[in-house]
Image (cartoon, rainbow, N blue to C red; front, top):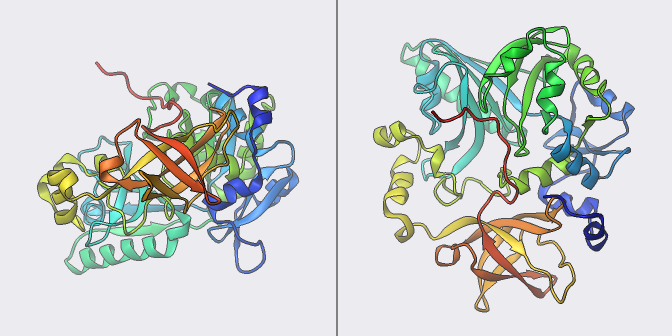
Length: 418
């Protein structure tokens, strides 16, 4: 699966490759620190401003490529404390959240969750987020830092509307000062976590998108959710901020297999896994159908049609290509005259038959595959896999092929089918 050292020498990787996807900005100006800020500096983190938070893009002990491959082969820790953690409580908590997203939260089993989306009245995606039904009166939500103000307002308005109708719902937004979030990703991630648990067997039946509360490295009341943004097996752990450095250090005690990783590797890993970055690959102008996320509109919710933009989204689902003009697709770039082509980054035009037919939204060299990959939106008639297109990079057209995603097979720990 992984590219050879010879292939590496043929490829050009640099910080700028990922800068286009992640929208970094100067560390100067208003920004927030996570509870691990000093910890990152201690371990050689190269810090950047991302979504209003100072976070490491990489560490001094390894390149972005090496960090990416270490995650695929072993395990890495990512500081994702910038994400918004929220608890929604009350006997009407589920109905409140279902009024603003497309998930069937009521139909979930206790302790399970799902990716979902907030939508607007025209069917556009306002944000993607993970909702976890802890029980009938408690839902745990993790949403994107870049959309923090918007998402908080969406949930507050829903809460106010339900409260005005006499409903029982209360929303608590956790702060980074009080609660942190770390992601441990890779084939050795769960093995490393097992050593830190008083009852390791709780992980045996903790499947993808399921959650449990446990002590971790002696720290009580940590929420462990089996999920992540890399395509690998792994967990996200919600930890009291005053103890998060202790938990991170406990993982690093297994130095051979667990290392710190930054935003650069996180971006290339998620792209190989075919996962969207909000603001790049999905936004308020793209619907779940156009973005290949129609599966996020749960069956019961389709029948009830009671979420924002339902009429437009359901019409697209029913009519298909007659109403959908563009689709999100994967693109694999081909070598030109035996040489590696330059990566196609966000904003690059997609051509077919000498006409522009779409745009790239994310792109980078794939450390695992040894070639350049991208995703973007293409006109409906050209979305079929194996369609040959061209990507215009620096005024030169390079051949690429439309392909299915993920680019690299995912390794989620899913419940066996009976």
